Length: 172
Image 1 (tube, one colour):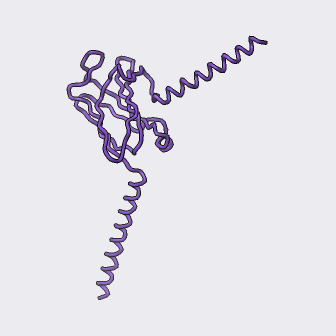
Image 2 (cartoon, helix red, strand yellow):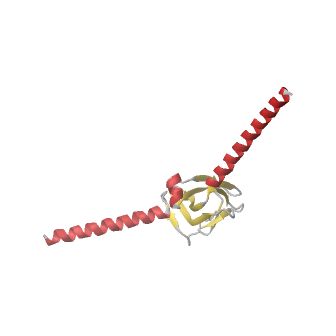
Image 3 (cartoon, rainbow, N blue to C red):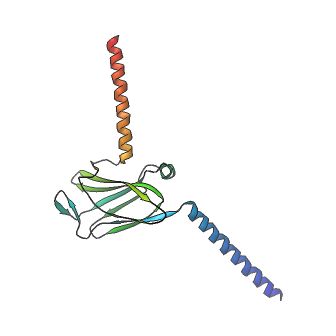
């Protein structure tokens, strides 16, 4: 009988530890829910400047939601190098992202920016690599569109300040 009680005590202890650890895992998942983003590079390649391209595409994913930037910073949260027929599957916290597709031609890096990629709890995301000049395209650099807009605003403020100072000096 004492042996049966000790077995029962051990079994209850193990079950309580398993239950406690599963509850912790569930609560951690609720605190930082994630969703899947799939990035596809078509088998036939992509159309770039009127020609078919099947070379390497550099993918960078930047958080643009303020809460995600506080948590992860402003740098890329995921990167990948893809060639034709490849795909990348990424688990990302829910929120808003900016995806950059980069293509290197010699020393020039042409980057296509796909803005407002929203990861929602109700469904995953699926993107296809593209380099379309009709969209937001930049040459070189690793800044997000938000960072570029902020830099332009800062330069405009600096220019306005310099103009005021010059006008003041001319009056003297």
